[in-house]
Length: 402
Image (spheres, rainbow, N blue to C red):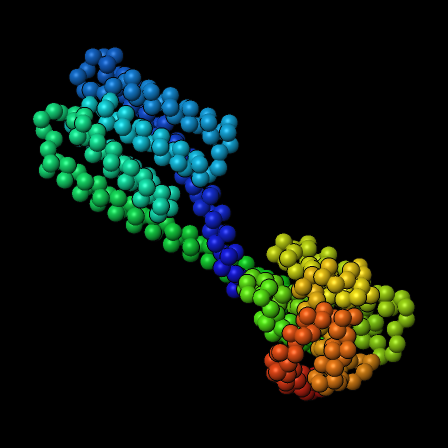
């Protein structure tokens, strides 16, 4: 699974897009309503029909405010969050103008629009804030400026508040449903992305290891060794970094896909040209993963896993902490698995002998801090080695049978 932080980032991006779309649609709907109301009531006034008590001046004022809000959004290029608050404050202004200018005895009902519109944004804090603000405005104007004097009393106030709270509750249900919908969409997208990444990585591994039967399972084992070591480091308490290291281990040798099989499986000593070709695989691998946005974060581990602590490694010759931590961990895991696995040009050695080689390379080949940490988790690496040994034996038996 991809990290929770990535999911939150994606959800945040969805909410920004959603908020901008909601703001635009609310403004469009408001413009249509105001324009229709102005034309509708103007016709009644023009033909002197007794079907309107609306205040055209207030409706025209709202339309003017609409142009100011829309123009301000476009000229100032306001963020989705600021636009949301601007639109909601504008709607409160419109509702107050409708209360005073509509002429309806039930004009206080326009305040129900505030919690309903606030709920469309899918933000609980925004819903509560503007619902309370709308409620206070409804109580204030209803008490201080009743449309019909002498009718408004405490019972009316109680009934209006109750109905307002009912509408606000339904708005909250709308908000919850909206959040669940986006949560489900993001989960589906991220699960799909996670499956796609795994499939791409598996395809790469198969392509590389198919060229050399001796390296069967090498990438998987390197990743497992690296993860066991990283779990002991505070830098990898973030699951996102641990996942990145794991995938880097799986793809650290992807650049070998560019190397001919006769070079990879050669049983004798390599020529200088062949060795130079082998040394090119980190650069090729780094270029390959950076071409895919979903794998770009793996480049440091893939590109620098053959660098050495003292600067004598390749391909760049960087040293010490200039080498990314992922690459320093993979360097140790890569060597350990390489020497404990049988290759075309030599036999495997035991894990204890491999640990001695790593100890001897502390401060020259390997990061001494990581070598110290390795001492604490040797047993974990032995477990990985034993499990892998059984898998290798099964694979060798299968290939011999075939």
